Image (cartoon, rainbow, N blue to C red):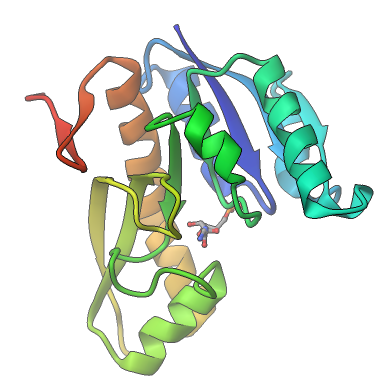
Length: 209
Ligand code: GAR
């Protein structure tokens, strides 16, 4: 059974998609051990509570500096001995010590087709604002392993979504979530839980499904 810790900062619709996929059996061999938020007001924490999942809030604001926070955050995660850490809208930079301790065991959902509209400064609505500003016709979402860079790790799954005339960042964000994120995040977790993802030569490889 794959032990998962999900890290969140906001509404938690991706967390909900994972919880639902586990309940209905489209993710197998996996269990969410805990949900960790940096934001005490995150609705994602309520979603965890509603499903009887341990929920923890740990914020950089509670610590005198980032190093102390990083240490405490890592200790909190380690308590649950996760096989996989899922960043589902987690807006805190993952400490390097954690990345070294969990190589190819941290995944992130990003709301664009990496390598477009990603990297420092591209998160949440800002991604969709960038897409509309540039006028691209296709966007989407990406699930990738987390390495030391920002959105640079091996890509596991991607799904395209069409940009439509009259889109606002909010409308586009919702479509990308509905058509891409809520599908590929649970799918990636199921593939990992069933031993179907490996990393070769810096690239994620999916076994025949
Ligand atoms: C999602 O769109 C996710 O892709 C994005 O934050 C949103 C969280 O929504 N993540 C990033 O931008 C990471 N760079 P949710 O809390 O409703 O799942």
